[in-house]
Image (tube, protein in one colour):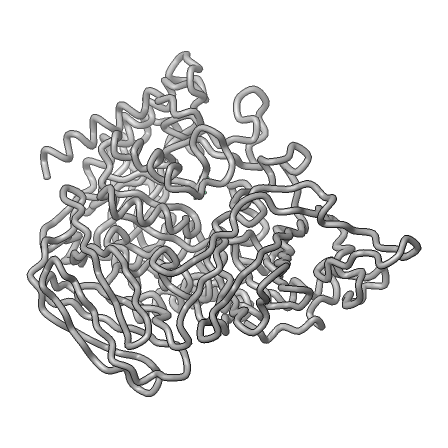
Length: 609
Ligand code: GCB
């Protein structure tokens, strides 16, 4: 992470070119910030909106390193000195939070915003200190006390920088340039159907740890097992060969192993645990300690596997009664991030009868995953490999791999998380297949205990009045669970067309219908033929559900989508007004008619399974 010198700040184009090659993280990503000693830096930060990047690039496109560079936070030493920026007299924005919904003039803004926050910190001599960001969209260049710490690429995953040798007892100033300008080599690329919320969108913390500390750990049942718990602990620091203990006091478990020369301690033990499930989301207090550090977590234990076309939770076949969710804040709009947001969204999903949610189309906040653990809702986690990205670009692949790695590292101890999804509606082709196979392989090898999927798109063939949809994307062979998006009755044909459609698959694997749906404005009523009425959407769900019931290998559904969400692609005045209206509830939580149709289906399924 400390690779990045000031020379990288040359010009916008170069910044982007560099960004895509800089994906690999060198600083250790610290897991479970909530279980550590932290000082929270959330609140109002002074901000400078910088559409032309004058804070980092000169008029001749040279990187700024003198006092005109905003990260220096230079103050004029006498009245004649020209300094054309001033954080302390600039307005503030709330962190965490997107900038778009905090200031009217920033609603459509895509570019750089500089953030500044001052703090004091008395660090004990034998401790290390990190600054940790839950997420910033999309590029974040971070500076402390006028010096660069590094850059992070990717809008939805955590990152941190060590500041042990740079922090001082008083008057530290942390400056972050966040840039959300889209670029074709990025992940996601320039084209998405969601709002490009910019900003420091998740909490910022200072994390204090001992010199040798527990950086990371993985504690989950071994693949397909419910009794054998296996995993590893990774230490970081000068004394790596320490003894490491994993304790689950309530289950009477205490296992001590020794870390090797790389600081890695692997363990395995049998335990008699009450298993986690949506009906009984049991979490245990787990304590991970080394000779110098201790971290507390709450972890659930369950097994997840497939058998033919079945998905087995704790050895029993289940149907995933789900819904797709964007990380869009309920009741207020903007990027969701808090525990309250998570509770509201997952609460609506539970009311619908869900035991599963698809967190589309990028990693949602850690708060959401932890709330799903507590509330008993299984999760599909996804990386923003969406529609078209640069399949042939090795830097784009490294970036996608990095984002997938950061998501897995953050979430792999959450019982709720059962499926990693590596892509959404990507066009079939050799380069794309190669790209996705790398991600699928990575997910399988970094976490063999979970299932891997992707939202694919089917092909159809006509026989007289009958349509057969065939799931034959070659990537299906590499996945554990097939995902498929279809919009019968919305982007093509009529809702009734679903009555004559059959589904076949070339793979004997479980299928999740990962998207279907149509738009409706809450309170807009009319004929079932009239677009954007609740009746149209309701009718579409009725015909969809009848079709879905006929798919013998269907094991889950995550219709599109729980709540209306902002999208720049949705311009229809008076109806869309820059919102995708396929929600089952409005942004204010008002339930549309289709909500109750789906709820009825899920009640039926719940009694059947
Ligand atoms: C899709 C995409 C999703 C869109 C949705 C729509 O297939 O996966 O991101 O928002 O369709 O509403 O068109």
